[in-house]
Amino acid sequence: MRMKRTMMVLPVGLLLVFGMMSCEKTNDKPDNNTIAITDSVAMAFRPANYTFYSLKEGKVIPLSDSATSKWDVAFKFYTIISNSGVSGPGNAGVIVKRDGQYDAVSTAPEAGYGTDTSATQLAVNSTYGNPNAWFIYEPVSHAFGPAAGLYFLVRTADNHYAKMEITQVRYHIQPGAPYPDSLTYKFRYTYQPDGSRNLSLE
Image 1: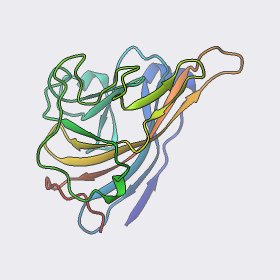
Image 2: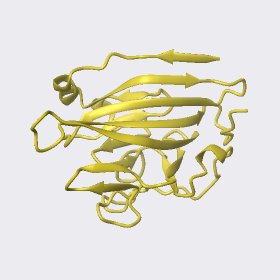
Image 3: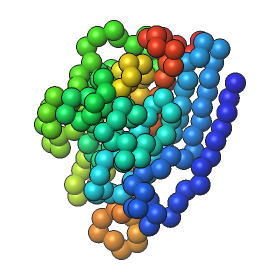
Image 4: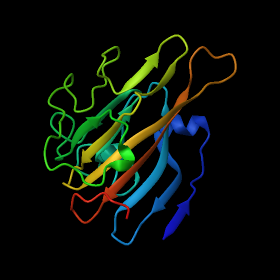
C-alpha cells in the first residue's frame, strides 16, 4: 500500500516562527508492517531552539514536549541530538555508518548505539571541522550536506528501531542577502513499529 501526503509549505516568515515543518511526505507500508518514509523539514538558518522529530509519528514535535520521550532526534543548523543522556529523558541511541550501504541494511543491531553523554559528546558528531562530523560545511559558499555514504541506525526514545539517511540540505536565500534565511533537510527513514529489529521492506 502506498500513500502520499503533501502539506502546505508556509512562507519563510512563518517558518521562522514555527521553526520547522514537514512537507512532501511519502509513506510506504509493506505487509510486514515496516514503514518507509521520505520527508523534509524546514527551519531557520540560525534557529534559537532545536526542532524535535518523532520517527514513530513522522512529524515535528512541539517545543513544549522537548522534555518528554515523544521525540527521537532533533536538529539545529548542523547539530543533531538524540533523545538520550543530556539531551532528553528517552532511551534513544544512534550508530553512525559511512559505508554507503543504507539500502542493504535489513536488521538493526542489538547493541552499540551511542548516546548524548555531554554537550560536546553527542551520539552524532556535529562538531564543525571535526573529520568525524556527519556533515561537510564550506563557510564561504555555505555548501552544506551529509558526508558521502553516511547514514544512521537509530534506537528510538521508546526502544523501537529505524535507519535514517539525510539525502540533502537545501538553503533558501533572498537575492542580494549575504546569508541564507532558512534551510530544508531532506531525509528518508525506515521504521519498525512492532518493536523488532527487522528493517526489511520485503
